[in-house]
Length: 214
Image (tube, rainbow, N blue to C red; front, side, top):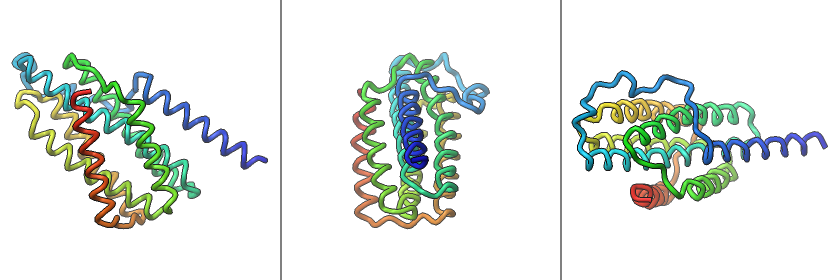
C-alpha cells in the first residue's frame, strides 16, 4: 500500500512539474549569462532580431523537451542514484529554459505555440527509453546531449555577429549539455544503434524546423 502511494505521489509531482514547465515562468538558479555579454544590441536590425528570436525559440523548445525527457526517465528508473542524476540534469535544464525564454522576450519574439505537444511527445519518448533498461536510457541521454551540442554549435554560427547576449547563453548551454552527455556515458550509458541515432536526428529536424516558425 505504501509503495503504491509513493508511486502516486511521484506521478502527481511529475504532473505538477509538467504544468510548471509549460505554463509558468521558469526561474533559473544561476546568473543570466547574457548579463555581462559583449555586443552591440542597438545595431541589430529588425530582420536580425526576428531571426535571433526564432533561433532562441527553437532552443526553448529543446529545453521544454529536455524537461519532459528527464522527468520521464527519472520516473521510469528504479535506481535512486540514477533518478537523482536525471533530476540534477533537469534542474540545470531549467536554467536554460529560463534563459532562452527571457532572451526571446528581449528580442521581441514569442515561445512556440506547440509547447504542450512538444512536452507530451518528449515525455513519451523518455518513458519508452526508460523501459528499455537503465543502460539504454543513459545511452539515449548521452546521444541526445551530443546532438543538442552539435545543434547549438550550428546556431552559434547563424546568430548575428553583434548579438553577444544570445551567443553567451548558447555557449553556456553547450558547455552544460556536453557535461550532461559525459555524465550519462560515465554512469554506464550504452551506445545506441545507428537506426536509433538516425531516427533521433530526423525527429529533431522536424521539431526544429517547425518550432522556427510556430
